[in-house]
Length: 153
Ligand SMILES: CC(C)(COP(=O)(O)OP(=O)(O)OC[C@H]1O[C@@H](n2cnc3c(N)ncnc32)[C@H](O)[C@@H]1OP(=O)(O)O)[C@@H](O)C(=O)NCCC(=O)NCCS
Image 1 (cartoon, rainbow, N blue to C red):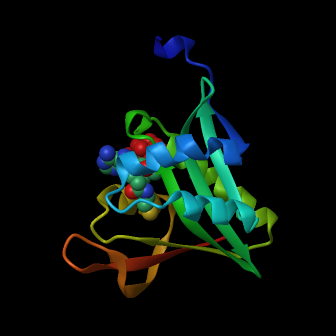
Image 2 (cartoon, rainbow, N blue to C red):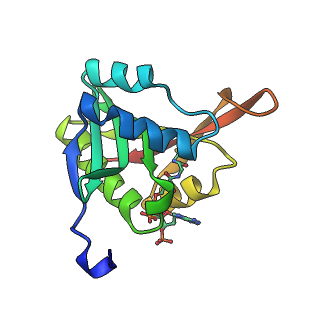
């Protein structure tokens, strides 16, 4: 299909029926992916879980945990074949709006120091590094730190 004929991607709340597609993307882009249970628990806990869909197929998703006065972005992902077309930033814009709707004043997330794409996306968006969680992520050799980033809303 030519890019001209491609329907505009749409943001929708994630449903349990999306989880097979979501997991397929997750397992395609992460060395240490979330499990089906992680996504299902997030949905059942009432976290703000969103998908971005193009031609009826899920091409990206985000999971936001709102809490009193703050919110935590737990997952933001775009399918490998759909990256670098603005979907990540669109999802992030939406998540920021959702967090504001929940009256969050600050949005937190963790990112691997080695994730240059994530660093660029979040840094360009205005997130600042506020701390480090030692050994937060599994890694090929042991564990890897996480940088904690924050955005004032
Ligand atoms: C990070 C991710 C969500 C970005 O989604 P995307 O749809 O490709 O990003 P966008 O097209 O909206 O680009 C937004 C910005 O991200 C950065 N970026 C995205 N892809 C990049 C790449 N391949 N190289 C360098 N920077 C990149 C750029 O700063 C870009 O802004 P620009 O286009 O003005 O330069 C996506 O690459 C992804 O899912 N990666 C794997 C999972 C991951 O790392 N998630 C974040 C973990 S915290």
